[in-house]
Image (cartoon, rainbow over all chains, first blue to last red; front, top):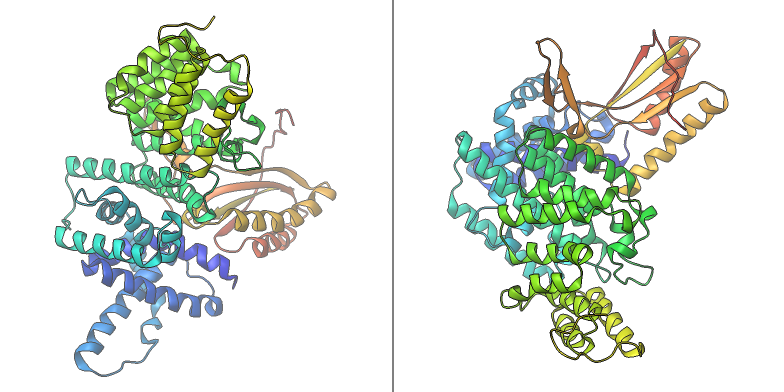
Length: 427
Length: 123
């Protein structure tokens, strides 16, 4: 029972619930965090000797609360109290507290904690950093590593975010139904941001950055346990699981990006695919579609195709069209263009994305997709131009290397002739 | 007699295991499972997906009500099960203690089985 890894997992598992309850009690993020920290230290001392408590969250809340109250008293009276005083008689109070933790109050506690981290006043990067620090319990150094910034810069970013949240004064009374729904939506968006930080990392990324995907999935499951009948949360969890399932196949041994069509599908994680498909099935029963469900459905069509040529591009095109209506965005149209190129050819796809040029001028993937389409049509010169622009906008060394490989093939292939003009079609 | 060993644990905690921790626990459990398998006493073993993937059909209303999530909201969740042939309850508890050493925390419920259909699924 005194396996430190096990205790670590117990602390991580109980963290959100414990800090959420401490936040309600103290109404101050720093105090709640310090109280949890103190309780965790005592757990590391006590649990190996006494064995784990039946309900780690309840134990941590009680011990954390008492420790913080004691600390406040000590500061007031300038006199020391017996150190482990609070640990006596824990058995009775623990179960009583555990009972009170059930139900709606506890659900709103955790939602409030999550929502605190994605306050609309915070820029996306601060939301993600704050959530990773407060909810996930990653150290400042770990988060700094994930964002490729210095510890000092990350410390400052988190301190600023906390100060802004403290000024914003989140309401502590139980939210009404519309308020609750708005909070859930904001939290879902924040969780997907965490996921994408990890997912966009690519080959040069460190382990810490890639771990963000797993952390986002854990947070989505946590949110889904609080709101088990929300189809969009099911969709979000399904989407992330289905995308993450492809992780092992997305990069080759040299860290180069492998496109979906070329991926070794036996490397896809079946357990994550099945869980994603199961969640999507559950979501669709509700007949309340939303953007996460549609994106998950697209990912599911890829996951269900045993070979690239088995992919149901017709359905994917339809789903992207649905997504364009729900959430109009040039990036969605760009993604749809890939399906269109499979169904109706590169020219049709190119016509779809040309009007996006102005809005996506600074977007790596736009120039990458455009270059690939131009190349298919035999417009080597224009393709080269597009690829050069993409390289300049690459977000990671792996992205740059992927485009570089296109250019190298262009240089090496004598059959690719310079483009004759924008209207010339591939033979 | 055949026993079901139902595995309960705090899902929050199991979800917080790293891949390495998860692999380590599975490897320790496999040692116990291998011995039972070699003795011809190990039946089906299942690890369940998270409770968020569960759907419950409440059949105490007509028509039955379909609810998202597991049957019971409990501190510990049913995360998997074994079917094992034990000579007695003492025998069962002996083996379950070994499983508990391999995967501490939570609880194992030992429940004799009254009706057992061997699997018809392809291996």
